Length: 385
Image 1 (cartoon, rainbow, N blue to C red):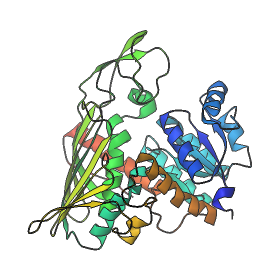
Image 2: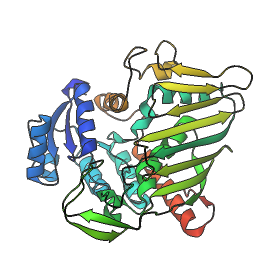
Image 3: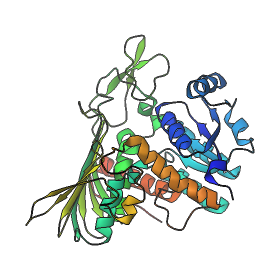
Image 4: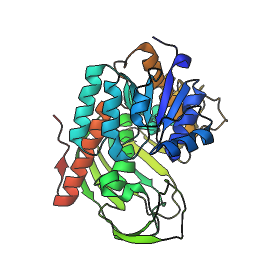
């Protein structure tokens, strides 16, 4: 076993989210052995930008480095299955961006390989790791909200609002059949299931495409960039711009979520509200330090993130005292602290708070049920083994 500050990580990918991984890894005291890009030149460019000492010439070169203990996969979705499998078989622990893969057949294979190797295999559903989210979960578990009745929420963005907006996620062969559901809807499914402590069992969905033709720039475009102008080609889009989904949870609660990448003014707005028999709890990702608690017979409350006021479960992942705002990058750090604790211990704990490859498979099954529902216009069960 190694201490956390003795572990070495490699980062695969050079886009927006790789920078967040790099920052969080460093804040934990983990060394970054090197970075892998879509080309050796791209890796060298990003290594210089991020101050990383080594740029690998290829993914295979990285896997062959005995110093690498952990691989962070932040590449496009279609690369995840082969890269995760190769890393596990090379004896590396893996933290993979969501979605884990493009099909449930692929995620099923990956979860089995992870179990066989005994390596820590995590999926980057980082939204679990806000303290107020853990507080919501604690209040559901201890019964203070009462039996949950309704679960509502949304995940709204506007970065693909114009027909000139482009990203590899709109390419079906790279981003998958369902763009919005796979990219951000999966975050909401994981968040709601984590807080509720129970799975989604059925779905009813509509998946509209409002911008059927997009203008693809000639050349690469990074996520959330505002590149305009230059030569383009018109491309017919098959994936959805938004999703409207009704869900049923295992123990009878009903839910509804709206997800969109074409909602002007919404940059990264995820929300979750749970109405129970005794009270309600609601959280907004763009105001992460606040938990709204609703009552019928007394005034409503706003519980601010303060470790001295939170449940032990929530306080344990809060890194700053009350009044000192924690944000997006802190959720990554909190998640990786839990993941790296298991890596340092030599393997996954029995019931980790972070999402595992089993959870990645679960989300793939839900996404496929959503696709079937939209295609048939019917309620569809999530088809588990």
